[in-house]
Length: 341
Ligand SMILES: NC(=O)c1ccc[n+]([C@@H]2O[C@H](COP(=O)([O-])OP(=O)(O)OC[C@H]3O[C@@H](n4cnc5c(N)ncnc54)[C@H](O)[C@@H]3O)[C@@H](O)[C@H]2O)c1
Image (cartoon, rainbow, N blue to C red; front, top):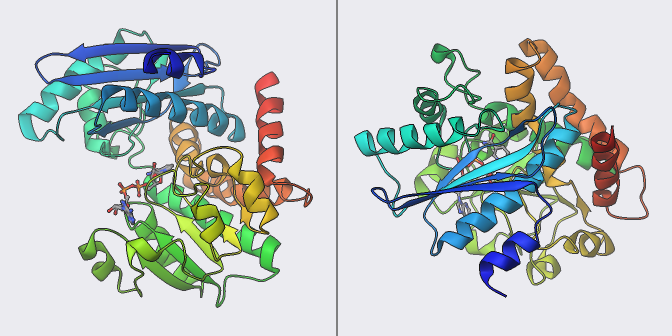
């Protein structure tokens, strides 16, 4: 079976739109995993891949996670995700031109997919895309959007960690040791919020400047998995929990912002067998969806959004009620119920 066949036959989504831009040697993949009221939504990831099919694989997998997030957030949209597989990250005029072309591609889908920021795309990039299509969330506030999702994603993860610690350890965050992996837009904010709440925060990033700027004790990136802590918070890349690393973890809770933290779904059960509480990623990191859809679609103000972000902790506690198996099963059941409705 070709990679193309394997990827598409192994995906339960609705459709994929593909464009290749010759001048920029860039593949554009838009994965529409599901629609609700005819729409799907999710971010655009810009990255260098060793092969275009790796970009397609990312778009497909991430779009499925977006469907789950939309359901968790009870939003009338399905999940979508886009990937711009670039030969190198463009800057200046070239970036603007590429994003304009990409905006026209989104526009050609007539609202089937609406985009937002993701890895290597910012609210400024959304402003640029927005010069070619209206189907864009999280443009800058000056351009009429709701701005970056990262601060509210961090707040949602903070509430999720607090709830997870309450369930697994029966205590508040004071003195709890949390290892935050990845000090980007989400992880850096999260680390400081946890620290302010009294947690003992350890940080790790491949970018030494970010570690130094945090002023927090550092863990070597290669040593993160085996480091003893109460909570491991993956906030860098997905897929850090593999069949190998799941056996090496020395924590009681896995709860962080990264998408697709488990390299394969069965690892949720292995975490449970090992007595490690896993906060399903698409629940704990859905604060960004609440931010974009709450402020731009549902007319929420910040207090209403803050309430919804706190609610992510309550949702997790409900999922944890069944102690007999991984919370992923309860999360999948919640998604199925909401999608059926
Ligand atoms: N930004 C959001 O609103 C949002 C929403 C949901 C999920 N997420 C996910 O959360 C994660 C973090 O998002 P972000 O916006 O902060 O991304 P970011 O790109 O701003 O930050 C990622 C950080 O991880 C670091 N990193 C990369 N590889 C690493 C490694 N091996 N070890 C340690 N650090 C490493 C990078 O140097 C960078 O500082 C991503 O997986 C993203 O998909 C983000």
